[in-house]
Length: 141
Picture 1 (cartoon, rainbow, N blue to C red):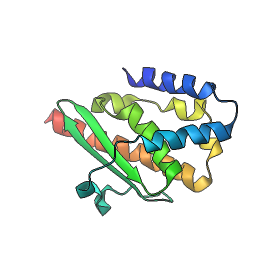
Picture 2 (cartoon, rainbow, N blue to C red; picture 1 turned 90 degrees about the vertical axis):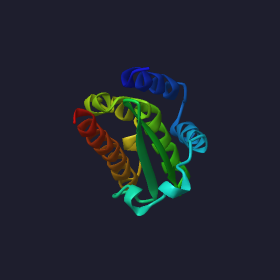
Picture 3 (cartoon, rainbow, N blue to C red; picture 1 turned 45 degrees about the vertical axis):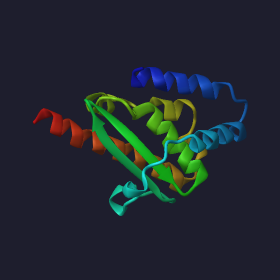
């Protein structure tokens, strides 16, 4: 699936919920299903800067696609990163760099987060794009 198709799928899923309490519960459930980062990758260099909670994000290139794993010490944040990984994992670096994260606004996520969590969300997206830049550069050489 393309990044755009995955985002549309997420928007459809969130439209089924009547209120934000149900959406928060769904995000938390997504976090519980997050493929956990291997312990050897829970390093300071893989911590997302700018997040209120601890979020580790690791990526590796498999063939020509980026694979991400992550973890967080906060259940809601873990769900948010699970959403992002669903969109960006198993995608080509160029596609990640070209992608707009429209689903975040479409589902109303940013406006329903505290300012520090919203900043953390932005930091997570930036870090995913930074990993894509690094891998795109490696692929070009």
